[in-house]
Length: 252
Image (cartoon, rainbow, N blue to C red; front, side, top):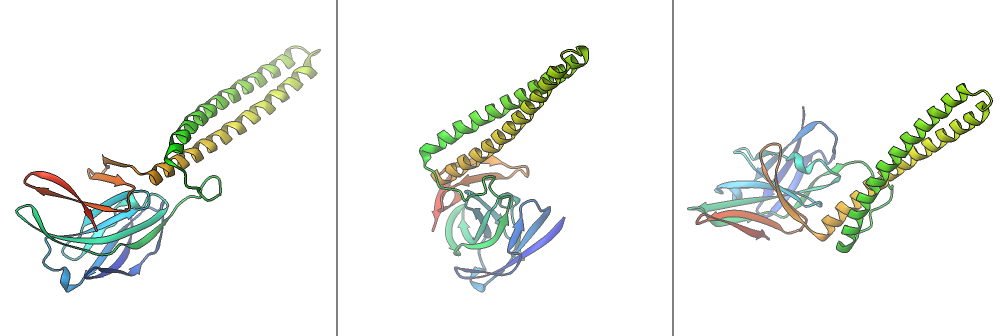
C-alpha cells in the first residue's frame, strides 16, 4: 500500500502541522504515518499519545514510538470530515497518574467523500426528529422492496401478454398493447424502487446526523482487536487505572 506522511511540531501546549498531505480521499487504499517533532519539554513522559477525532464522535488514541511516529487510525479516515489531533503526555507512579501535558487540538487533514444524495446542505435536526427519521428509513426500505416486487410482477405480466399475443391472432393487437403497458408499468416501478432506495439512504444519513447532533456513545472492538470508544461530545476523555479501578477523566 502507498504510504503518506504528515509531520507536526510540538512545543509545550502548542501543536503545529509542518508538512504532508492536507486532503485524503476516503476510498484511497493507503495508510498515513504521522511524525511528531517533540520539544524538550515533552521529554520524561512515560507515554505520549496522539488523540485523533472527527466531528462524528470517533475518538481514537495512538501511542508514539521512540522516534515520535505513529499511524493515523483508519477509523477516522472512512467518512467525509475534518480529522483533528492533539498530543497527551502522561507520567504515572504505581498506576496513579501524577503529571500530564496536553496540546491544543488542530486540524490534521480533511477526508473527502461522496456528496449527499440530495445535493443540498444538511439541515440540523432535533433529537425528537431522530425517531421520525428512523421510522422513515424503515418505511422507505419496505416501500423499496414492495416496488421491486411490483416491478417483477409487471415484468411477468408483460411476458404473459406477449405469449397471449402469439396464441391468439385475433387478440394480437390488444395483447401487444397490454404488453407495452406492462413494460411501462414495470419501468415506472423500477424507477419508483430506485427513488425509494435513494430516499431511504438520504433519510438514514439524516438520522445518523441527528444522532451525532443529539449525542451518543458506544464501545466496540474493530477488526484489529482494538477497543473503540465513540462519542459525539466535543470534550475529550481519558482513561486510567487507580487501585484496580478504571476511571474516566475529562481532558481540558
